[in-house]
Image (cartoon, rainbow, N blue to C red):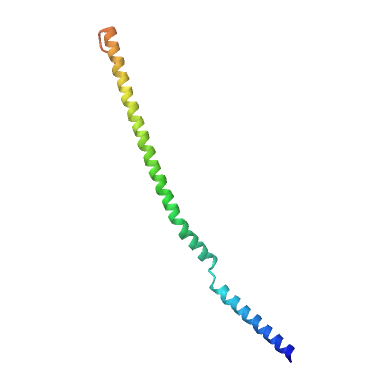
Length: 98
């Protein structure tokens, strides 16, 4: 009888453990829920990265604009210098625009 009692107790314990596992597995998130949670975590990181790239692009374009403007001014100064040198050498201004 004692052996039957031990087996019954073991079966009841196993039954409780299986029931606990079943209930626990029901409460676990689905793969879709995991994916959505991961997307919710990653989305702000991606948005911040896009903002950073946009700011870097704007800064780089401003630098390029400044360089182009400086080169334009240097070129204009070079043209004025060439014109002045031609006037000194020839006594007349060039017939065509440099």
